[in-house]
Length: 223
Image (cartoon, rainbow, N blue to C red; front, side):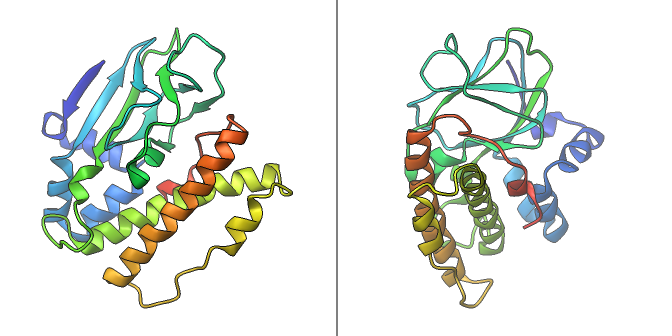
């Protein structure tokens, strides 16, 4: 496994990566200062075959976006058992462990012939407390938590489409939508409450049906 800081990349390399990461591209378009601050907390990770990037039960603040290749998802601590899913290019993973400071829900690794894998990694601890507007601004935090909320909501929607009669569907429908003013601390707090509630439902659903733990592209959409 090879890990590079962002300042080790050429501008052409970074621009190519940002084409696949609308959240970070949007931050750069709004504020160069915010973008540079975030890039201090990001890495490019290149993986060879049979390498683990995320292990069930661990705690971590790192969030990952798969740029190239394919990763396998396993329910336990080891990769020797049957996989329960895969991560494909364009997908974000590792988000559930960030929500509520919980443990990793699965083990994710490269396959036997899984060389050439590239990930964009972000240490989400850089977002700090919700109330703080420095070094990461509330505007950037709002975009981040909108992305996180969309990510978990999409994963639940995939579950709901596959099993519309599941008893947890009622809990999803019952969650209130935020209808207050946009763009301030009130919305930010509401987003965090919403993503925590959604994640609780998703973790409960995944414990019933371990497959489909990961996946989905809408979470990478523009904030």
